Amino acid sequence: MKKKLVKIVGLLLISYCSIFHTNTTLNAQCAVCRTSVESLDGDDSEIKEGVNSGILYLMGIPYVILIGSIWLAIRYHKAQKEEEKLIKEKSKIDDTPLA
Image (tube, rainbow, N blue to C red; front, side, top):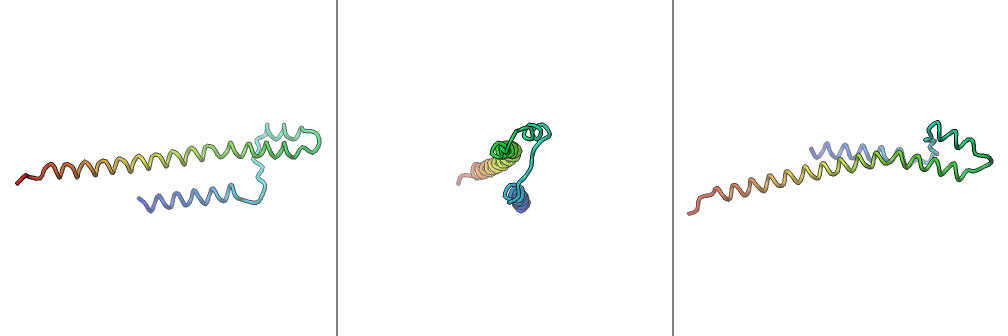
């Protein structure tokens, strides 16, 4: 179980690094955003970069939510296992005969 989790986290980390830490400019613009940016007059590169950065930011939010949900589920699962282990140990102690 732990090895599988490590592999999944490693894969997510590699994916994150390859997507968000590249030196190339990513053009993550939908058709509506692209049309509105192209309609700007002159060289408003700051506005264009701002729109592109905003789109990339919004694209990353679902991944953050997904990773956070997985982390919480794993944490909850570990807490449940620990609680079951403590209950079993307590029941063993309670079942021992008094001498």
